[in-house]
Length: 400
Image 1 (cartoon, rainbow, N blue to C red):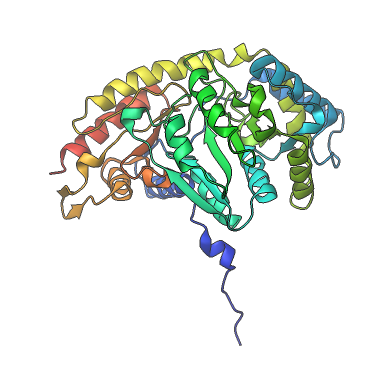
Image 2 (tube, rainbow, N blue to C red):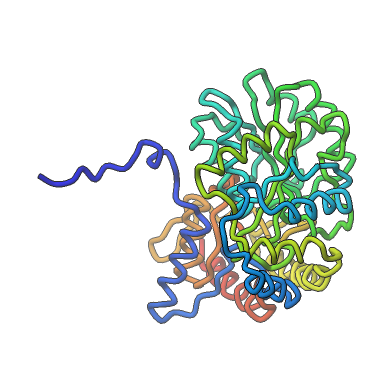
């Protein structure tokens, strides 16, 4: 008698991460001997600064190698508290902060700790791929609010109000946005706040992981608006701004009851994040944010260059991202076109076609709730970006 190999009902509700799936396919092509340019993963192509690595080495020598407090070391949470005051004008005491194994775990903690089956969770699209899967994991109902390139992929206060009701438990958004690069201004978020305070049971998750890769120079945190302070959770981390993706450190600043709930949940899953990584994160967070300026400047130059190359391809429509390191062009003009028996029906097909024909890895916009688009990361060298644009132009021009 063989073992029942049925996986859980929970697992069947989840989709594979589209970004990781495309990364896997591009690796397989590389292993087969093809020259593949991967623009699918959201990872800075920079190394962690030496002063941060030095702090980690000191942590090893100082024996930060034992079990740590579940919400993070007290001195790291104190540093994060000061950072919130310094950079975001938000006051979170150390006991309102929970450090996790990446901002992804921070988000999962928040959703699983505060959302119930039957609740609705509002997701302005495009949204980061894992938001909707985490909502499904909690058994809640994702409510997707569509946007368009004409609106810079942003939701107005009026549209926000029309999608909120007594069942809406949570709203999740990112600014700067992954995947669109859109940035909400202070004026726009204050208009949001006027709506949010009308729904006192609504929890708003502000994902600010790309805070320091913001070309507007005016990052504004929703949690700094006093009238809705008790409704907002701010999510951040060190992965993007300090090129520390592999260190796996994220954190939240939240109303105390939510921080306690996330602490309780995390205690049953992973406990505390890596002690060595926490020492590195403290060095990053204590540093002046200007340490990220060189990387931001490089991304800005790539945005300008890559944006011009993409916009020169007939049928590719782009906005001008105000932050992060992604292009999110609308490519629906290619739907219905064909080449060598391959017909493009949607953005999934187009991403697959670009990978197979041009050997450039992108991600379908469908995974982000915007099926008329694809996402391309410009966290790659200028040479790779130029070659990718050339390959894509050749492949797309073959479609008719």
